Image (tube, rainbow, N blue to C red; front, side):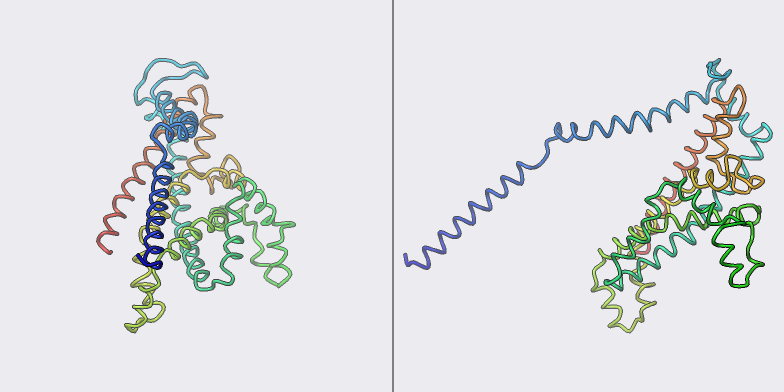
Length: 327
């Protein structure tokens, strides 16, 4: 055997041995089911303790009569009937539900639409992409209570910088008590909520855009499509799975909103209940609802969970069918 041939054969043997070693190492690194269970057990225990157990406890509490903290007899759906028949609970629950729906609609229009727009613009400008992503994602890293109190100071009608700027440029008619008027309070809180969370859809849409093959857009351009047509006919349908996920998460978040509206409108959802939401109603019912507060508040919590969970599951199924039809 000549020297080059011998060297080639030796290299192949070494390569095969190395490949076998890599495969052995890779298989050895796979976690066994018991090892994986050990690592997952702490997270599962915490989730069970702080999420699953309270949900089942709320369901149990909602089925019994209560006198303060003393559990009474089993009353079935009595607390649920009380929730929808006792005044002012029956009035407040419908008003709060409408405000949650307005939060969801406003967030879909402002937060998710502008989040997608910013993601597309930043995707096309690689130079500023990283810096602006950090800028837009920083607000949602703050606690909603902190954001709410900061915006309360910013929008203060006496010393807030917003009204001061409007007066300085001659727009005194627009220097309004933003959080003191029922006509402006809810839209302002919705806008602040969208401002805080716009970084969340921005990150998801940016990741989805980065995963799309560039050949699709290039093929559309070759076929004569302009930028808008390529986005509408090619990019947007490919983003439908992410859009569906963002929409469902937006729905869940806005029907559970509490901290921001508590900071900006108080526990009563002021002014005059203009910013009242279901979570605030639950808070008031639980801590100021009378001797049967635990039962009625638990019934409200169960209704909220059933509605949010049911709509989320239904929306996910419908969105999947829609995606399959379009893709």
